[in-house]
Length: 441
Ligand SMILES: C[S@@+](CC[C@H](N)C(=O)[O-])C[C@H]1O[C@@H](n2cnc3c(N)ncnc32)[C@H](O)[C@@H]1O
Ligand code: SF4
Ligand code: SF4
Image 1 (cartoon, protein in one colour):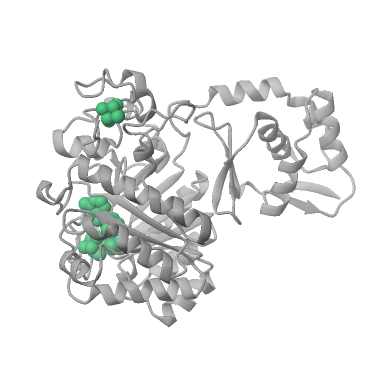
Image 2 (cartoon, protein in one colour; image 1 turned 45 degrees about the vertical axis):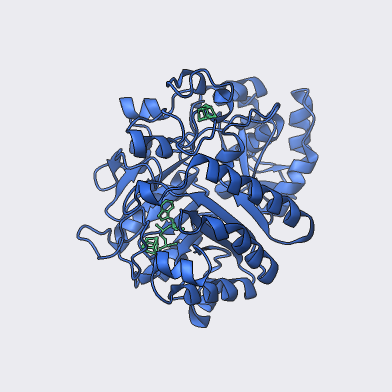
């Protein structure tokens, strides 16, 4: 029996983790030890028997990472072959743990070497006209990417080992070729998913999505009926709730996402409890409004109100973590802003370090809420855009301690939060490191 590697689910990095592996069953990334990373590096060379792998570790005076090996088998990074003999034993002489550590250290340490998550707005067309829409979606626009261009982006994401592509828009289901796009993506990306307003979801689309193998979905819900329909448009509440019920009933990992604005902030804790207690959703998430697109500053809640909501939801998150299948999540960043939690990891805004966003015409942005164009996929590859040398790109990747501003320079939380969400600074003051506008410090 020999063992070989499927590269689909892991990548080497020198930013945050040395190695990232995607655990499909748990639907999360694992970071691994240098020894574990070394095992996969060896297996990239060729297929080897278990004995050969163990011998190689022994010759390097390293412990063999047995449980990681078993996890790899369970998650198909490591596959079993049936031939008995090792081939290419001589290639093992070319790799040493020291050389491997040098290889890792040469990778960028201010950002992932290729994006980990891509948010992809495949249309600007929408049947709703939500008051706060960050993309000002509605009418179909000229220059919308063609099917071939979209499949080309998916190919590039696959080559770059992007783990997570989230299709959005506009309303992605209004593209007639959306199922074709999802089917293509599901053969190339570990976690393709989408965000939907729920208006087109019915038994037929559910069964098509099942056939394609999509298992994680996001539906937007911005309040109970009256509030939701005021924000999103008449009768959408029923559609969105129906979509949530159908997805949950059919055992999708169903995430429900609320954008916090003045209109809905008071009912969010009740909405959270209602969803978690009545439907088998896997996650309830809320995120503060970004003042971009149709959103205005008047819609935005203040930092104190946001903190109060955050604290209430944390209590709910704790309550439901004990006795419910659903989890309740805030944007991770707010665990760091204003909270210098000893021993916790530093948080870094993900924009153009971990993620990027592509809009309906191929323009590339650091994230969906930061309207600073970095390039266009019709003119350059995504890899070229990711590796661009420009002042803006350098700025986005500035280490925490160099992020100075009147508000943040003397704050003892700076090493943890790195001035928070850059969009929440930029969209109000046109500076990146001015401090998150939801920060209550
Ligand atoms: C732009 S929509 C596109 C996908 C789909 N039409 C939907 O509504 O889910 C993607 C997500 O962004 C959220 N969103 C829209 N405008 C926003 C804003 N200004 N700030 C923060 N989130 C926003 C939406 O509520 C939705 O959850
Ligand atoms: S938030 Fe989604 S549903 Fe609402 S207008 Fe924007 S794209 Fe359409
Ligand atoms: S003042 Fe700045 S550094 Fe301090 S917690 Fe707020 S955003 Fe972070």
